[in-house]
Every structure is written in C-alpha cells, then in structure tokens.
Amino acid sequence: MKKSLIYLGISIFVFIFGHIYEYFSHGVYSSYMMFAFLIPFIGLFIPSLLNNLILKRKITDNVTLPWKCGIATLTVGSIYKGVLEIYGTSGTFEQVYLIIGSLLCIIATIVLITARVNTDKNCEISD
Image 1 (cartoon, one colour):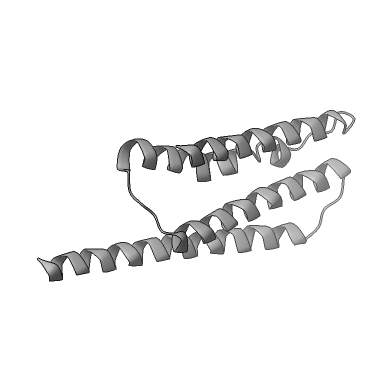
Image 2 (spheres, rainbow, N blue to C red):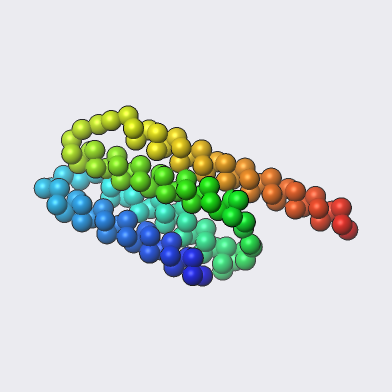
C-alpha cells in the first residue's frame, strides 16, 4: 500500500507542476501538459492499488523496473511536448520519448507474461 501512495504522490506532483507551469505561461495551454499526470496515475497508481487490494501478487523487479522506466519516460515526454506547445514551437525529439517509453512497457509486459508461463509450467511439473 505504501507504493500506491508514492505513485499517487507522483501523479499529484505532475498535476501540480503542470498547472503551475501553465499558470506562468501567459494564457497558453497544452493538453499534453494538463493531462501528463494521468500517465503515472493510470500506469502506476491504479495497477498498484488493484494489485494490493484484489490480486495480492508479488511482481518481480524484472517486470517493475522496465514498466516504471517506461511510465517515467512517457510522462517526461508528455511534459516536454507540452513545454514545446506552450512555447509555440515543435520538434521531433518528443517522438523518441513515445517510442522508448512504449518499448519499455512492452518489454515489461512480455517479461511478465513469460514469467507467468514459466511459473505455471513449474507448478504443473511439481504436481
């Protein structure tokens, strides 16, 4: 439950950061900046909360590390894209954030699935 509260705190921090940044942006807003808090909220807080309350499974660091890095990369990329929109320019570097963040989340999902399959096979063999 402690991790869930930390993830909620990260989401709140990103929410406050985005709104403070937009407050000082002279009336220019970006949806990437306003909704950047949803990435850690949906990607970290909600799964952690569901796991703690319903599933109660232990997930290894092999899965959580790339997942957390992917969520962090997507969050920073969204904030970066928001800063560029507020500034009134565009770039191509924000696409790198999207690609790398997505790849890290996909890797974490693949590792989770393969670990689950291997665990299920080991249980069948021992029975």
